Amino acid sequence: MIIFDGHLDISYFAMEWGQEQTWSVAKLRQLQSTRNLQMAPSSAGIRAGTSVVALPELHTARIATIMSPIYGRVAREGPGNLKGGCRTQQIAYARAQGFIAYHRVLEAQGHIRIIKDATTLDAHTAEWENSDPQKLPIGTIISMECADPIVYPEQVYQWWDDGLRVIGLTHFGVNIYAHGTGVPGPLFPGARPLLKAMEAAGFILDTTHLAEEAFWQALDIFHGPIIASHNNCRAYMRIDRHLTDDQIKALIERDAVIGAVLEAWQLYPDFEVFTTPNTVVSGAEMVRHIDRICQIAGNTRHIAIGTDLAGKEWTPYDFDSIADLPKIIPMLQTRGYSADDIKAILYGNWHRFYRETWSRHSRRA
Ligand SMILES: [Zn+2]
Image (tube, rainbow, N blue to C red; front, side, top):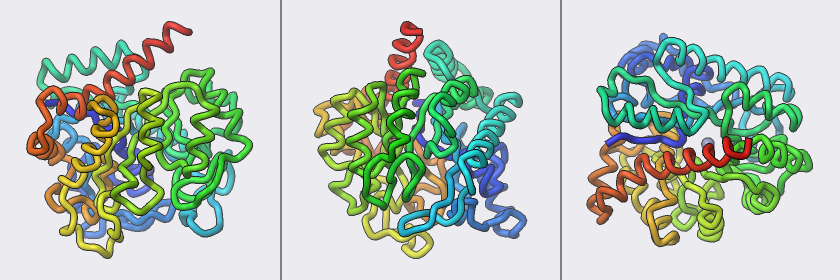
């Protein structure tokens, strides 16, 4: 069975932590253990963990397609904000363009295939289903996590030409366009023209990381296609990073797809990264979140995978690396999901969403 992971930060691991994604997880870990690979915090102040993601392991897990975020946030002082970041939006723009360049060189060398339209996605999926996947590139849809690198609304057209297809307005804390995770609050005035430009250009809005008030405002303003690339259920968590049942219902009404997260700190309410041992959380916890969204929807159409795996220290104990992702198949079977449901959750729902969205867009264009 092939898998579609809706949120995997391959370019972040490479650009911010030096974790070259064409190397194996074993090689990255060996370099980390001998301190040949920097373990220092990224430009956003996020400390690297022991590697769990690299392209060879994606092949092992039969992950045919991923959504890969590019990144560049403007530094902000104040509670809830990440340390570090770029001084200005212009610098954030240049940094995020560097992330695009990393994807381009991986594509030129045959490691990934940047997917920007329905025809390519369908052909790529068929190829993975019908030939030896070890020889095939990983399908990659480029997204942006935090829109700080978009300097003015009309710039979205240039980003579209650069291959970007999905935009999330925020990340942690206060960002240029909206309040994000951990800091309640609304959109900022620049968000409305940006959302309207995104809608006109055909972009997908990723609502993940929007503060709750900003989330509802964004849904009112933006009438294009919507996803939540990496979100779990607030009902089982105490942090605003995750979706209330009302937010889940609103996303379902808009025919969105939600990617369930596999990180331990997003599955276990009191998990502290680098403090809580990862032995307390099993990957089966993610299935509980998947099941809740299916129960709210009354079907399996709206839930998929967005693992967000980043470091061994905050990965469930029964998953050593992304290579173990197929372990969720028996976990879903145990919960009573049929083979067709599991195929939809692991690949089909993201595939359908992107195919339908892009088919509509090309008809409009
Ligand atoms: Zn995120």
